[in-house]
Length: 102
Image 1 (cartoon, rainbow, N blue to C red):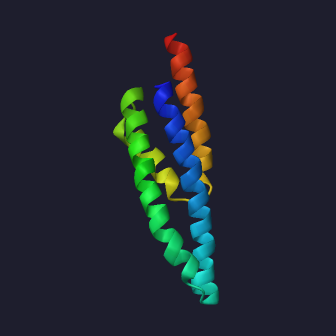
Image 2 (image 1 turned 30 degrees about the vertical axis):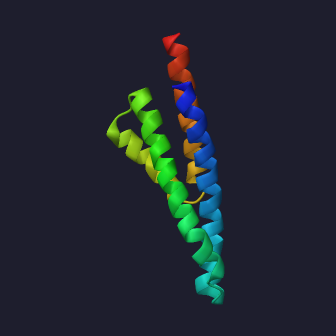
């Protein structure tokens, strides 16, 4: 389970940062008619979000999470700043589970 935690944590931070950059791009696009940034970052964030979903599935299967919990974690990459919060909660949960199993 620990081996799947690190890729999840990395992707949670990357997706969180790209989502924040994407939000800035959206403000520039619709607030100031500067579409270049959002045109570049949107597909990058989309691809990285797909990788994030795979890491959630990988960790969730190893940790034997319910599908409802995994979907909740997956949605963490869709709300600005939420992926950072979700990452911390998941890390604590995984560490508690591995400490309890030892």
